[in-house]
Length: 252
Image (tube, rainbow, N blue to C red; front, side):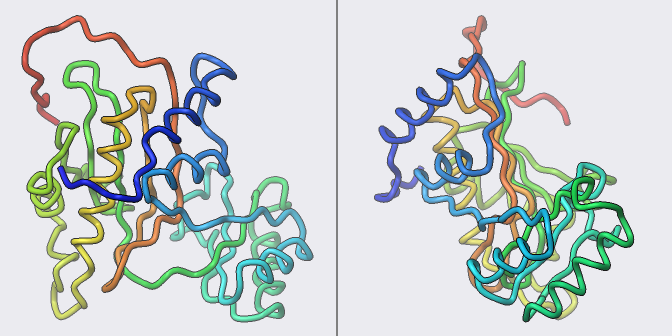
């Protein structure tokens, strides 16, 4: 398990204690999620709310063009195929036009919950997830975002804490792994950066059992680097384990 000099374990523990003081279990808001993940060197692209066209324009000025405009309503979230995302908006005119198109197609801003996010380099959309399995304990999962994971269940799993060898094998264990390595002439993506991200998530969950669920989706893996465009974290008092035997992954 590699050591990273920028991990702030004690600061993360103090933050978790403060957050849990609000209740027994909670899903963190955007700012708290970014703060906690940042303590482990996991940077999430900021997404600024855009309840009006003027707010969207101001958000784009803050982040810098080009930007993406995204609807985050539950039925549209992570569903670019439904048309709730507009990419590569280079200026105010394009942003306002995209805002008008989204509201015309899908309803009011209150229903859409639009956000503005700075564009990330193009690459392969993936999912990195950590959850507490009742039988196995903490499990790290990986797959490609969209149909491969949602429709085909093409996800791979390893027990936490994972090692560098675990992370390497995890990336290569899914059936759609060739898409990461230059399938049919496409550009290979930065799998070492992806593996490091997974190792950092593993460290966070291993160091702090109060972190009972982490989902990074999508994680765009580009030819150089990764971009975490969405993240959720759930905290709860750590579950008690009543077994003393070795942990094994159940058949998924």
